[in-house]
Structures are given as C-alpha cells and as structure tokens.
Length: 285
Ligand code: R5P
View 1 (cartoon, rainbow, N blue to C red):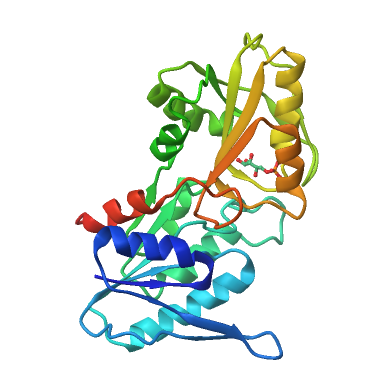
View 2: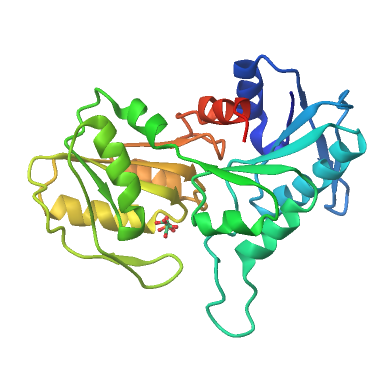
C-alpha cells in the first residue's frame, strides 16, 4: 500500500501511513498565477495499492483531488482507494427546488469514475455512498470522540437535532452516560432556533455532539437553551470542524470546551481519525 496525501490532509495522511507502516508521498500542489491548480505526485506507484487522502471541500480541494486521481492513475497502480475525510456537498443530497442540481450525487459520481473504492468519515447522509458507482464505506468517529472525552466528567450527551441523535447515542453509550436530542428548526443558512430543553439539565456537564460545525449557529443556540435549563457546563464535539470565518473564536468564547476530528485540519482538530482510517484500509472489502 502507498499513501498519497493531498494538501488538505497533510498531517492526517502522514499519520495514516505511519500507522500502516506504508510508504507515503505528499502531492506537490501549488496554484498558477490565475488561480488554477497544479499538482504532481512523484512516487513509485506502479503495481501498488494507492491510497489518496484528500478532502473535496472547499472547491479548490475538489479540483486538486480530481487532478491527483488522474496523476496517480497514470502511474499504473494496482488499485486506487480514495479517502475523503470530509465529503463536501453532502448536505445538498436532494433537489429541494426545481432547477437545482442534486449536488451530493453529482460530486459522488465524478469522484467514483477514476478509483476502485471510496472511504468517507461520518458523511452527512449515507445514501450518498450508493452514488459512487464503486464500493463506498463510511467510517464512524464516535469511538474516537468518546475516547477523547472519557474521564472528562461528561454527565449527558446531547444531539442538537434528531438527525444527530444516533451519534449522541453512540458517544453516550461508549461513555456510559445518558443521551438525548434537542429540537432544532433551521431559520436560514446561519440561524437556527433550538426549543427549550425538555430533559433535566440542571447541574449537568453536557457534551453536544454533531457531525459538523459550520457557522456555529446550531451549537451557540443549543448552548443557550442548555444554559437556560441550568447546565453546569456545555462542551461540543464534532467530526468535521468546517468553521466559517469567526465561528471557532465565537464558539471558544461561549463553550467550556470544543474538539473536532482532523478530517479537516485546524486549530480545534485534536481528535485523530487516522487510526480509524488505517484500520479500514487494512481490511479486505
Ligand atoms: C445539519 O444537519 C448538520 O448536522 C449540522 O448541525 C449543521 O450543518 C451545523 O451547521 P451550523 O454550524 O452552521 O449551524
């Protein structure tokens, strides 16, 4: 196996290769003066099981992924596995209004054209896996998140909405504490309303778990509802710290703790998905 890291996943790909004991190369990616992407994969990939690790968000990373795929294919590997730690566009998983694209399916179909299998981590909707046109597998970061908070005095794990209820259950069960979910209504791209918490939050140290944090609107609203219900502390964890400009600073200022996985590498990505990814790559599937 030979691991190729794209520019979005330098540390993650290095760590995956280290765990696997596999050779590793970083794609040499830069931008032309007009902004177009240049990349080069200088690695002996002939006959290898090549693994490319690169996000498809933001859009520049998607272009880089398509170019790395082509470069790797040309080197004559035995197989190509794409690891997409954060699969962008997964939230646009259906046509909401006539005339719109089905963005998640369109992205999936393009990625699947030049590889043998695709690995994602906590993809927003698992249905997207069926659109790759090649075997796809989604890995769950709940165990890594639970390990990070084990011994940290969490009394209750909450999802900010019913869509994340399964994640909260998974993390809560692993920590051996109760779990529940709040009721969220999305008002706009950056605004949400969270209904007053129905569960007993008084004096509790609460961990909110979601698949991603983007503007931080969801977590800030949830924190407000939980503080109003008497929570002693409120921390948050997610798999993908997308963090729109200013969001992480706002969250750090209002939460008691925040942690996310290194599927998107950044200041708060203190939980590594590398062991999870390496284990999946070792398996036959
Ligand atoms: C929504 O379905 C997702 O699971 C997240 O709750 C949402 O994307 C978070 O976005 P934001 O941080 O902008 O509220």
